[in-house]
Amino acid sequence: MNEASPTVGQLLAAAGIDPFEARLLLAHALGLTRVQLITRSHEQPAAGQVQAVRDLFARRRAGEPVAYLLGHREFHGLLLRVTPDVLIPRPETELLVDLASERIGNQAWRVLDLGTGSGAIAIALAHLHPAAQVFAVDLSAPALAIARENAVANGVKVEFAEGSWYGPLAGMQFDIIVSNPPYICAGDPHLAQGDLRFEPVQALTDQADGLDALRMIVSGAPAHLAPGGYLLMEHGYDQAGAVRALLAHAGFGNVESWRDLAGIERVSGGRLNTRP
Ligand code: GLN
Image 1 (cartoon, helix red, strand yellow):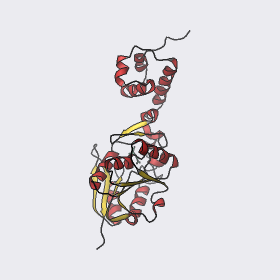
Image 2 (image 1 turned 135 degrees about the vertical axis):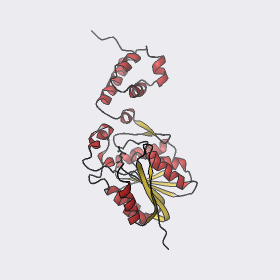
Image 3 (image 1 turned 120 degrees about the vertical axis):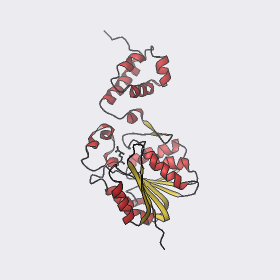
Image 4 (image 1 turned 90 degrees about the vertical axis):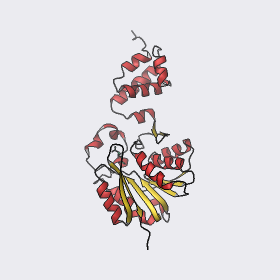
């Protein structure tokens, strides 16, 4: 005998995951708003929809990130498509966007985002600064496909290039370079926890001490920055001192770190000293 077809409310009650996440996934699978989940909680979705909802709940119980299950994540007020080919944009990365944005203002700057992933930083900056010319690089072709889609969906122009860090940028100079590179060190237990288990490993760790990518970005920056240009990078909770030292060593002045909303030094940067 078939079990009685469950109502919207019964599906929600049986989700077995965080209730907020359950409502997001249920609304997504049923094509309802979260208000409709309440007003229509006694309705019985079709069998196919019930199965789709149960599958999503099961995948979430197995740890898959909500952003991948929904296929999107909001970042700096923009909706971005995300798949397992790209890192899920984090709220703390909005600090990097804000710091870059303060410096760009209404100037027609050339802006570079290294390791763009979903395109989050580049697209947010292009959206905030229509006069700027935004470039973005990533090693991953599948990530760039998502980033390109996100730029179009958000109505901004970003020039994307495939390659390793400055590889595709021979002879090009920028007024500001930003990056949220892989900075988790190999063997960090966080890599085996939560959402990170499902994210592209090359977006998370350099498979070394966590500073490899940051070193490459800093050491290559002087050749690709206009005099007085800025470099701003996101990094790990315990890396600010090391990143400031890298910047100072590479000839940057005004070297500073900024704290995220959790009070952690999360972004460091500096300004390339103009030659006398
Ligand atoms: N901030 C991410 C985390 O710790 C890592 C992202 C990165 O390595 N750039 O989950």
